[in-house]
Image (cartoon, rainbow, N blue to C red; front, side, top):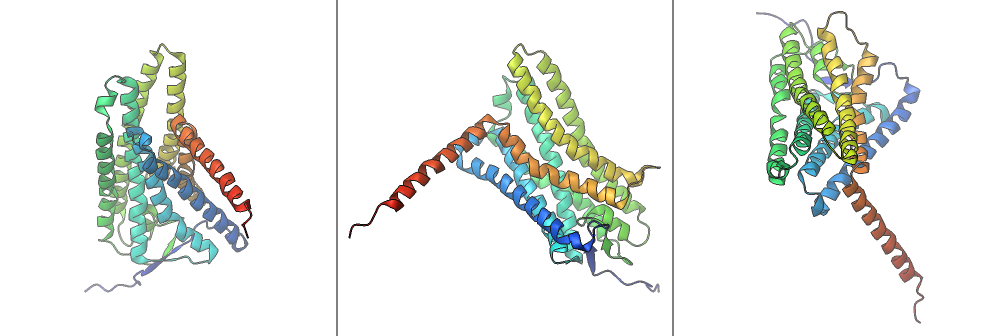
Length: 329
């Protein structure tokens, strides 16, 4: 019989940023709280607009709403515990809660990759096949693709979740990260971790590089089609839209690739602080700017927003005038 000479881990500690001093905890907590509220409210406005305005219920806006819901889900899974860690110095997270958070973190990451794949497919058909686009990409078709993405995204983190059920954790329980993720938990696992690390890396690269390959191919085809356009205004509009989406896609894919690949590439090392800062950037910056970028660059959404603001301005004077009327004695 083999006897264990270690204590099984029953809970983990979210360290967050290792070099952060205690006197700065409340400032960071307020920053994270404002970041969370702004992200959720900004994306929720887009969802409410889509639900109330039937004119927005088109394939392109279905993708945008799917991305908004995914961003709300990701920030809600990741940020509240980090806020509690700095607001009340509550770093403890339960064993199974941590595994659930890890699964959902990578689930929403996989989902975003599939959503960007769908978004690239939509733009590819719209630009390269403009006459056939209304028949190829209808609202029901986009809804099916969206639901399919939300279901399939569970497969990729699920593979790692199954592998984690077969290992034990011992020794240190400190997660040097802003949330529970595969890299951090793998570092705390006991025994030979090569299979777990290799399987996790292969799964991450598949869900990142396969969609990215199609995204690059679609943008290459779009650029060729744009240069064949006779309308200069249409060319500028298409390039502007693709440039915006390209920036967001770059922010999503490139830093992730370096963070995931660093442990597997010789002579490529990232310090804990640089890894956490990079992860924080690509995790929370896109969900924050996505609703503002897409809303501000879409004429239809700007027109609806202006109409809502005008209605509020009309209602407020009426209510104030009613309040100023003296009562008859």
